Length: 489
Image (cartoon, rainbow, N blue to C red; front, top):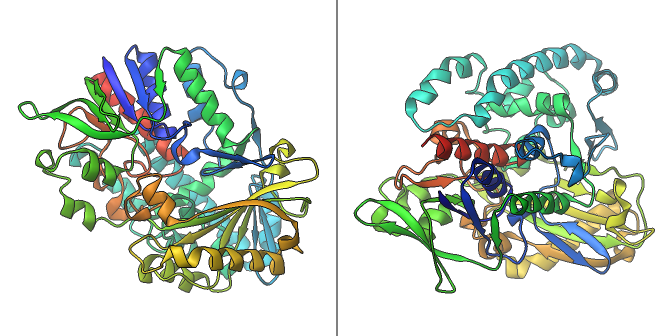
């Protein structure tokens, strides 16, 4: 079967490799000049910056792609475990070193609040139960409502109607520890006070499989998967933006794609790794959309966006770990500003990425490569990013300098910034959302946009906006689901 995959993010690459290995002839068409989608790479002034995802969990999903082709991951890319997974820092000066050593975690919990040790044990047992029931659902297609009904009793038993924060808070009392064990939904675009508690399984997922890094950066993993795909006989076309998915009006089936260059590429099936809302709004003509009409797409809740400052320093800050979570002073109200009011707050909670803590080759000798990631409202908010970008950048640098990185402004030697306008215009993300459809209870599993389009029977969807959701395990699992759907069609 001739199959076209639109976009070469991790979801598209995962689907394409699996489909090519099944014996189909697969062509990936990618808008940008490099594969990876959100996981692109910037190189400037001797520094290498991963633009997007940097946290690798569930590495078996990566190993599977090589094993099904009788190859070994280590022949293509080197994955190394991280310890700590994250440092979680608070403005009172306390630091929680979050890793996979249960005894060490419990020792730290005791130092934060002795009364929470027993609560943590109960939380961990509960997260194990959620993981055992929830993790297998990540590779199960929820194409029919009956699929949802089958798992509903388990989900009720596991308190999926609660938020992640509500789930954690019933076990943990110390406010800082509550944040340590509930911040994870932010890494996939979710509001921890609204995202279903199924996402509490991330704690067990990390404890079971660890947190990993690809030497050379996430971009090295993208290149490894692109190389594997091409070695299997797949075709990767860069600088090829799709203008329209072509639909036969009689059969209501996709017949190929029209590129913005005017070229027509025929196909017997289409897999879209493009933003789910933009796929339907911009690529599928409205007369072929019964389920995904404009009004329906506009009614969905979309994740927040991101402001990211990439910068290189001409000195190293070895007191900082590879992954740093910097908690601000006004956490719950900040979340409300971010998701509900869509107001750009003056305070921060940041994810600070320092890959040179693990791989010094990503910067010149004696230097560090960084990015500071600030969750910000999507473009439904009133922020004028043309006006606010420079002041917001300056505020982040000042905050980091005062709190964590002494004399930072004197040591920055290269930088670049992205904001919600980048997600909208460069990545075609609806509303400038960084993670597409927000992962709420009623936007998960069957309620989330399906992996097989309800409107066009041979159009399949992978990536953050479809089931099971954002994050590397989620988008790679969506590729596995689609390959199974096509393989059994």
